[in-house]
Length: 205
Ligand code: ADP
Image (tube, rainbow, N blue to C red; front, side, top):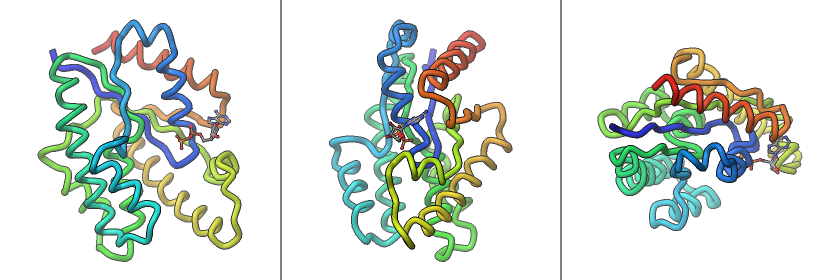
Protein backbone atom coordinates (compact mmCIF):
# COMPACT_ATOMS: atom_id res chain seq x y z
CA UNK A 1 0.00 0.00 0.00
CA UNK A 2 1.18 3.52 -0.81
CA UNK A 3 2.48 5.44 2.19
CA UNK A 4 1.11 8.75 3.42
CA UNK A 5 2.44 12.22 2.84
CA UNK A 6 2.08 14.80 5.60
CA UNK A 7 3.27 18.37 5.07
CA UNK A 8 4.00 21.23 7.45
CA UNK A 9 3.22 24.67 6.10
CA UNK A 10 3.06 28.24 7.33
CA UNK A 11 4.84 31.58 7.10
CA UNK A 12 8.50 32.03 8.15
CA UNK A 13 8.90 31.71 11.89
CA UNK A 14 5.58 29.96 12.42
CA UNK A 15 7.42 27.07 14.11
CA UNK A 16 7.42 24.37 11.42
CA UNK A 17 11.05 23.37 11.87
CA UNK A 18 10.72 23.41 15.65
CA UNK A 19 7.80 20.98 15.46
CA UNK A 20 9.60 18.82 12.87
CA UNK A 21 12.62 18.56 15.19
CA UNK A 22 10.46 17.70 18.18
CA UNK A 23 8.54 15.09 16.19
CA UNK A 24 11.78 13.44 15.14
CA UNK A 25 12.57 12.83 18.79
CA UNK A 26 9.04 11.81 19.75
CA UNK A 27 9.00 8.11 20.78
CA UNK A 28 5.45 7.60 19.51
CA UNK A 29 6.31 8.86 16.05
CA UNK A 30 9.59 6.94 16.00
CA UNK A 31 7.60 3.70 16.12
CA UNK A 32 6.08 4.70 12.76
CA UNK A 33 9.58 5.08 11.24
CA UNK A 34 8.70 8.16 9.17
CA UNK A 35 10.96 9.82 6.64
CA UNK A 36 11.53 13.45 7.63
CA UNK A 37 12.31 15.73 4.75
CA UNK A 38 12.02 19.37 3.70
CA UNK A 39 11.83 21.88 0.87
CA UNK A 40 14.03 23.41 -0.30
CA UNK A 41 16.00 20.15 -0.15
CA UNK A 42 19.32 20.21 1.67
CA UNK A 43 22.71 19.54 0.10
CA UNK A 44 21.38 18.86 -3.40
CA UNK A 45 22.16 20.69 -6.64
CA UNK A 46 18.64 22.10 -6.89
CA UNK A 47 18.29 22.84 -3.15
CA UNK A 48 21.59 24.72 -3.12
CA UNK A 49 20.51 26.70 -6.17
CA UNK A 50 17.31 27.70 -4.40
CA UNK A 51 19.18 28.77 -1.25
CA UNK A 52 21.52 30.91 -3.35
CA UNK A 53 18.61 32.42 -5.28
CA UNK A 54 16.78 33.34 -2.08
CA UNK A 55 19.85 35.11 -0.75
CA UNK A 56 20.51 37.12 -3.90
CA UNK A 57 18.59 39.42 -6.16
CA UNK A 58 17.27 36.71 -8.45
CA UNK A 59 14.44 37.32 -10.89
CA UNK A 60 11.22 36.10 -9.31
CA UNK A 61 10.19 33.98 -12.25
CA UNK A 62 13.65 32.39 -12.34
CA UNK A 63 13.29 31.75 -8.59
CA UNK A 64 9.96 30.00 -9.16
CA UNK A 65 11.52 27.64 -11.70
CA UNK A 66 14.41 26.83 -9.37
CA UNK A 67 11.97 26.03 -6.57
CA UNK A 68 9.90 23.93 -8.96
CA UNK A 69 12.99 22.06 -10.20
CA UNK A 70 13.85 21.34 -6.59
CA UNK A 71 10.32 20.05 -5.98
CA UNK A 72 10.68 17.69 -8.97
CA UNK A 73 14.02 16.43 -7.65
CA UNK A 74 12.58 16.03 -4.16
CA UNK A 75 9.65 14.01 -5.51
CA UNK A 76 11.84 11.82 -7.71
CA UNK A 77 14.56 11.07 -5.18
CA UNK A 78 12.82 11.13 -1.81
CA UNK A 79 9.04 11.45 -1.69
CA UNK A 80 7.89 9.09 -4.46
CA UNK A 81 10.25 6.20 -3.60
CA UNK A 82 9.35 6.46 0.10
CA UNK A 83 5.61 6.52 -0.57
CA UNK A 84 5.91 3.62 -3.00
CA UNK A 85 7.57 1.54 -0.33
CA UNK A 86 4.68 2.30 2.01
CA UNK A 87 6.48 4.80 4.25
CA UNK A 88 5.11 7.78 6.10
CA UNK A 89 6.72 10.98 4.78
CA UNK A 90 6.70 14.24 6.74
CA UNK A 91 7.89 17.29 4.82
CA UNK A 92 8.76 20.67 6.33
CA UNK A 93 7.34 22.87 3.55
CA UNK A 94 6.12 21.49 0.24
CA UNK A 95 4.16 22.67 -2.83
CA UNK A 96 1.63 24.82 -0.91
CA UNK A 97 4.52 27.09 0.10
CA UNK A 98 5.25 27.57 -3.59
CA UNK A 99 1.66 28.45 -4.41
CA UNK A 100 1.39 30.87 -1.49
CA UNK A 101 4.83 32.53 -1.69
CA UNK A 102 5.18 32.69 -5.46
CA UNK A 103 1.50 33.65 -5.61
CA UNK A 104 2.69 36.79 -3.80
CA UNK A 105 6.10 37.40 -5.41
CA UNK A 106 4.66 37.11 -8.94
CA UNK A 107 1.63 39.32 -8.28
CA UNK A 108 2.92 42.12 -10.47
CA UNK A 109 4.25 39.78 -13.16
CA UNK A 110 1.31 37.53 -13.95
CA UNK A 111 -2.41 37.96 -14.04
CA UNK A 112 -3.30 35.10 -11.73
CA UNK A 113 0.03 33.83 -10.37
CA UNK A 114 -1.44 31.46 -7.86
CA UNK A 115 -3.42 29.45 -10.41
CA UNK A 116 -0.57 29.68 -12.88
CA UNK A 117 1.90 28.18 -10.41
CA UNK A 118 -0.61 25.47 -9.45
CA UNK A 119 -1.06 24.64 -13.15
CA UNK A 120 2.70 24.31 -13.52
CA UNK A 121 2.64 21.52 -10.92
CA UNK A 122 -0.43 19.74 -12.24
CA UNK A 123 0.03 16.19 -13.52
CA UNK A 124 3.35 15.43 -11.85
CA UNK A 125 3.28 16.63 -8.26
CA UNK A 126 1.87 14.50 -5.46
CA UNK A 127 -0.85 16.17 -3.43
CA UNK A 128 -0.29 15.66 0.32
CA UNK A 129 -2.69 13.46 2.26
CA UNK A 130 -2.63 15.77 5.26
CA UNK A 131 -1.30 19.30 5.72
CA UNK A 132 -0.75 21.14 8.97
CA UNK A 133 -0.98 24.89 8.58
CA UNK A 134 0.87 26.64 11.38
CA UNK A 135 -1.02 29.85 11.60
CA UNK A 136 0.40 32.92 13.27
CA UNK A 137 0.28 36.69 12.92
CA UNK A 138 3.36 37.86 10.97
CA UNK A 139 4.09 40.43 13.71
CA UNK A 140 4.71 37.51 16.08
CA UNK A 141 6.68 35.34 13.65
CA UNK A 142 8.96 38.25 12.69
CA UNK A 143 9.55 38.98 16.37
CA UNK A 144 10.39 35.31 16.96
CA UNK A 145 12.95 35.33 14.19
CA UNK A 146 14.46 38.51 15.54
CA UNK A 147 14.04 40.15 12.15
CA UNK A 148 13.70 43.78 13.09
CA UNK A 149 14.18 46.37 10.41
CA UNK A 150 12.60 49.68 9.51
CA UNK A 151 11.18 49.89 6.05
CA UNK A 152 12.08 46.33 5.15
CA UNK A 153 10.12 45.11 8.16
CA UNK A 154 7.04 46.86 6.85
CA UNK A 155 7.48 45.29 3.45
CA UNK A 156 8.13 41.90 4.95
CA UNK A 157 5.10 42.27 7.16
CA UNK A 158 2.83 43.15 4.26
CA UNK A 159 4.25 40.30 2.21
CA UNK A 160 3.79 37.75 4.98
CA UNK A 161 0.25 38.98 5.60
CA UNK A 162 -0.50 38.16 1.98
CA UNK A 163 1.12 34.73 2.21
CA UNK A 164 -0.79 33.98 5.42
CA UNK A 165 -4.06 34.96 3.76
CA UNK A 166 -3.44 32.60 0.85
CA UNK A 167 -2.60 29.73 3.21
CA UNK A 168 -5.78 30.36 5.21
CA UNK A 169 -7.80 30.41 2.01
CA UNK A 170 -6.33 27.02 1.00
CA UNK A 171 -7.30 25.61 4.39
CA UNK A 172 -10.84 26.97 4.12
CA UNK A 173 -11.21 25.56 0.61
CA UNK A 174 -9.93 22.11 1.54
CA UNK A 175 -10.81 21.30 5.17
CA UNK A 176 -10.41 17.58 4.42
CA UNK A 177 -6.69 17.97 3.87
CA UNK A 178 -5.78 20.95 6.06
CA UNK A 179 -5.57 21.16 9.81
CA UNK A 180 -4.98 24.68 11.07
CA UNK A 181 -2.81 24.85 14.18
CA UNK A 182 -2.74 27.97 16.33
CA UNK A 183 1.03 28.44 16.29
CA UNK A 184 0.94 31.00 19.10
CA UNK A 185 0.87 28.13 21.63
CA UNK A 186 3.98 26.65 23.24
CA UNK A 187 6.10 24.13 21.29
CA UNK A 188 5.07 21.39 23.80
CA UNK A 189 1.38 22.07 23.23
CA UNK A 190 1.77 22.19 19.45
CA UNK A 191 3.80 18.97 19.34
CA UNK A 192 1.11 17.17 21.36
CA UNK A 193 -1.68 18.50 19.16
CA UNK A 194 0.12 17.57 15.92
CA UNK A 195 0.96 14.12 17.29
CA UNK A 196 -2.66 13.45 18.22
CA UNK A 197 -3.89 14.56 14.82
CA UNK A 198 -1.32 12.42 12.99
CA UNK A 199 -2.29 9.29 14.96
CA UNK A 200 -5.97 10.04 14.45
CA UNK A 201 -5.41 10.50 10.71
CA UNK A 202 -3.42 7.27 10.38
CA UNK A 203 -6.03 5.28 12.28
CA UNK A 204 -8.69 6.51 9.81
CA UNK A 205 -6.59 5.90 6.67
P1 ADP B 1 9.83 28.04 10.76
O1 ADP B 1 10.49 26.71 10.55
O2 ADP B 1 8.34 27.98 10.61
O3 ADP B 1 10.42 29.17 9.97
P2 ADP B 1 11.08 27.89 13.34
O4 ADP B 1 10.63 26.58 13.86
O5 ADP B 1 12.46 28.01 12.79
O6 ADP B 1 10.04 28.45 12.29
O7 ADP B 1 10.86 28.94 14.51
C1 ADP B 1 11.25 30.31 14.39
C2 ADP B 1 11.71 30.85 15.74
O8 ADP B 1 10.63 30.82 16.67
C3 ADP B 1 12.82 30.00 16.39
O9 ADP B 1 13.70 30.88 17.04
C4 ADP B 1 12.09 29.12 17.37
O10 ADP B 1 12.89 28.78 18.47
C5 ADP B 1 10.91 29.99 17.78
N1 ADP B 1 9.69 29.21 18.04
C6 ADP B 1 9.26 28.15 17.35
N2 ADP B 1 8.08 27.68 17.83
C7 ADP B 1 7.77 28.50 18.87
C8 ADP B 1 6.65 28.55 19.78
N3 ADP B 1 5.65 27.67 19.72
N4 ADP B 1 6.65 29.52 20.70
C9 ADP B 1 7.65 30.43 20.76
N5 ADP B 1 8.73 30.44 19.95
C10 ADP B 1 8.79 29.50 19.00
